[in-house]
Image (cartoon, helix red, strand yellow):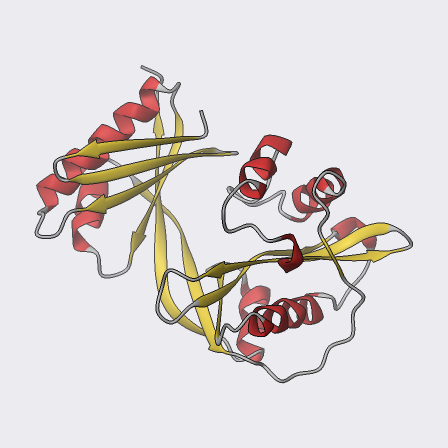
Amino acid sequence: MRHREIVHPSGRARLERVPTGWSVDLHLEAGRAADDATTLLRAALAEVADLGGGLARHWVRAGDPLTSTASRSLGLTRERDLHQLRRALPVGEPWDLDLRPFVVGQDEGAWLTVNNRAFDWHPEQGGWTLDDLQGRLEQPWFDPTGFLLHEREGELVGFCWTKEHRDVEPALGEIYAIAVDPAAGVHGLGRPLTLAGLDHLHRQGIDVGMLYVDGGNAGGLRLYESLGFAVHHTDTSLTIEVPSA
């Protein structure tokens, strides 16, 4: 079971299976109070227990007192911050890198190896399985032409996976996942890979670039700020270990 949605009078809760447990996302109806948020989150955690338990992670937007209060009342504790960064496109900085699009049915194994080595520390992006990747490749938003791979001597050493958000105003072009294989011994690829992804998004008619970066990733923050990104908002991850029912 990868996804589960709970419908409640106060709103909806969406559960998504991630390598480290469950991601819990709440959508409250307008005009609801903190008690409603607590009831909805409690129902979501009960569903996690019914599904076998595990670590439940709930992201809270800064300035959202309802879900913050609900999370604290149910014993969730702060884990880390996640910044969403944005900048106008195009960047206008040149880059030079050989790239090709991801080929479904061919590149899954190599990509999983590089991704999991690069993100062995990351609670959501690390430890992906073929099922995890396949779930994304089957999403309506997936476009292989925006999943850019960089190879050297026939081996994958880096990638920039982009995602388009056409259901918001303005439309956003996201650097969804980007990494360089730490085992390849190659340095200096982060900047051209990012530029390549942003240029691809701008060619699709998107004028605002966006990405997420962990609050503790000082190197990533320095790189993206040097590319003209600024923090748009910050989400906080709150977690709790849920025992099996």
